[in-house]
Each structure stands twice: as structure tokens, then as C-alpha cells.
Image 1 (tube, rainbow, N blue to C red):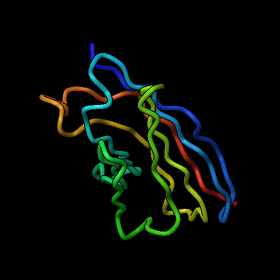
Image 2: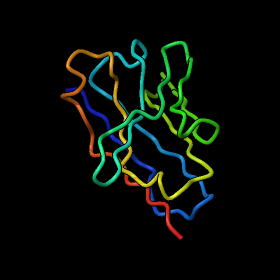
Image 3: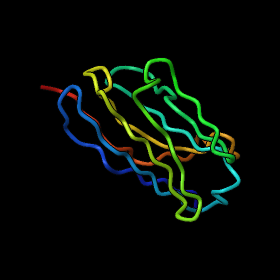
Amino acid sequence: QVQFVESGGGLVQPGGSLRLSCAASGFTFSSYLMAWYRQAPGKERERVAFITTAAGTYYADSVKGRFTISRDDAKKMVFLQIGSLKPEDTAVYFCNAPNYPRWNDYWGRGTQVTVSS
């Protein structure tokens, strides 16, 4: 079964940083692009970053320069280093493999990031 388990979130002050982790299983991890998404209260889920199988990266404008995505194919994990955090970064953060068949059927629980003073 395809599964994603996110971790590393928490309560952090504005300007702080966290390292989010995602452990993937149930598919050939190294063959797929991986992405991080977030969903803030009352808002739609948005993609914030992705990393290709060749480690090319993309970031949404709202997080560019502050977030860094990386992957470890041997561990079947993808990471998101989030920094210079702002209150508007508060959200539940999820990972997924959006090129995998029926990818939208597979979501983990996410990890909560709360940015507040």
C-alpha cells in the first residue's frame, strides 16, 4: 500500500526554522518526483515544492529562498527544510508523489506547522 508518513512539524516563532521529513513506502520511490504540499485553515491545499528524480527542484514563489526540498532515495525519504518562517506558513504539511497513478488517493496525516509568537 502506498503510504506517506510526515513528521517534524511543531510550534515555532516567526523567523524560526524546522526540518520536515516524509517517509514513503509501497512504490518505487526513486522513480517518482516527490512534492510537498500544505493546507492552511480554511484554504485549499497548495503545492509548495517538488523535487525530480534527478534532484531538480521547484518552489512556489511564496516560499522561494526560504524552503529547501531534498530527497534520499536510499532511505525513501523526502525532506523540507523550512526557514524564515512567517505566520502565513502555518499549515498542515503533506508529501506525495503526484506522478504516481491515482496519487490523489494517497495522503498521509501530514505534520502541523504553527508559526506564532
